[in-house]
Image (cartoon, rainbow, N blue to C red; front, side):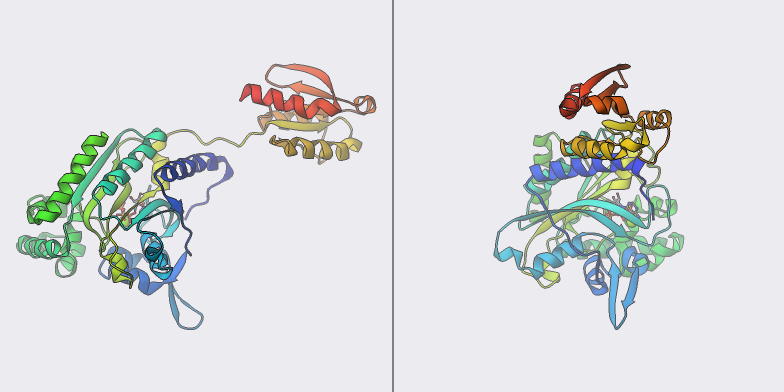
Length: 413
Ligand code: ATP
Ligand code: MG
């Protein structure tokens, strides 16, 4: 679990701003749900035999007897809220977005943390496939706006429940003779959740899976048309993608469209999946709601930061106020208040240090302008305005100084 210190926050804000801006343009509005939920919500939605539920959840008993879990992902909570507030009765389509921390007790690595941040969306009420394409296009647009170019979009279709069941049997039949050579985790999954073996990170498992039957051969006509139309839409939008028939992803609730965005540049290393999403047409009903088809994705903010580039930067200010005489600190605090009221980022070191040290500090904070209050100048109703970039200095009437600084700062913006 990481601290994000102030010098790193500007890059975080850039990502969050880009996500909010783009998702708003695509018709999404933010929802905020609690960070803890009843454990059962995640067990039912994510699935009992998934890594998350089997070993990664932070679960605790809340005083009495409620079993609660720190949310490991955002979709289950969003669906719970959607059902609880009977949102489908008010509107046919709901487009929700969220940004916040998620918790999974995984083995930490670069790009893999126990508290990490996701930005995601959920679209309820549209069975697709055009909204699926729109969503994939939105993620790529957002990442491009952050300067992340070297991406690969993988898409697949899991088909409907029946398709999945048939495929599960075929996959089990294919993998069973290789059982002894599978990793320990995968051997266990063979009996419970064989699709997850396709998602295994073990090299040996990957080799065996290379010869597995393809999901796409099992799609029924309606599934296949849906998937073809998705691809046609992506082509029309100019969104590049690759069909990856082995893409399954770790959660149980998916059906039909699945997608992942992988990054290739930067410092991602093995954790190169930036964003994962898919359709979960049965989940709303599964959680006690009506039959409402839905699709969503979540992007890992830390992973975007790893591919985005750019340096951490200490925060800067527009203008500093300094005093030549400690007795003028009251005047300085009034001037600071006036500058701030005018929308300027203003600060001053009023501890009573020497003028030299105050000026050094102003320079360190990146101030473009320093206003120096001296006894003689104050007597005459003027302030000394030092332009640090232009290395110039002149006297300005106190009554005009705020406007003058504002003009100077605007000029250099
Ligand atoms: P991975 O295969 O990398 O474990 P996942 O399939 O578990 O990913 P999802 O549950 O789909 O991932 O979450 C969506 C996104 O959230 C991921 O693509 C990734 O960017 C991010 N993410 C997931 N787990 C972590 C983590 N432990 N630390 C940082 N980011 C994460
Ligand atoms: Mg994972």
